Image 1 (tube, rainbow, N blue to C red):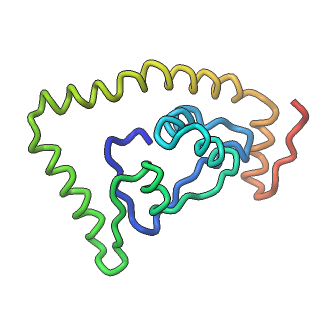
Image 2 (tube, helix red, strand yellow):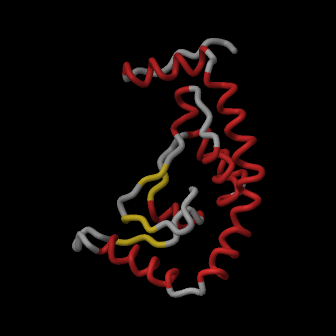
Image 3 (cartoon, rainbow, N blue to C red):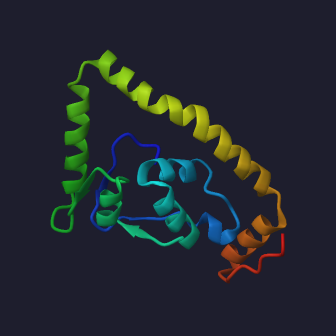
Length: 144
């Protein structure tokens, strides 16, 4: 979610599974809300469900979906084509547009989300979530 343009294979899947182990997705959580809207972001984060490439494109998480099942180089070709288009733009104008888009993200989202994630990192809930993940079992979260 920190990428400028996302080109995904048709079989790509996207998820925020952190909550299922007691963690907070930090920066990704704020960016998800900005990209897909708060209501959809909450549903995706709380459920931990995987979003396929087509749905991700519909939500605005992915710019281009490439069916690379018949051609192993299709994904690389599509990515290279988008990169070439960017390189052909006037550099200073392109950098200014990127900076304008990213300014608010950096100012607000990074601080808020990483601060929250850091505060939760030392909790027993996070420790239990990690143990459960490594032991391949459902977590038994303490009442916090």
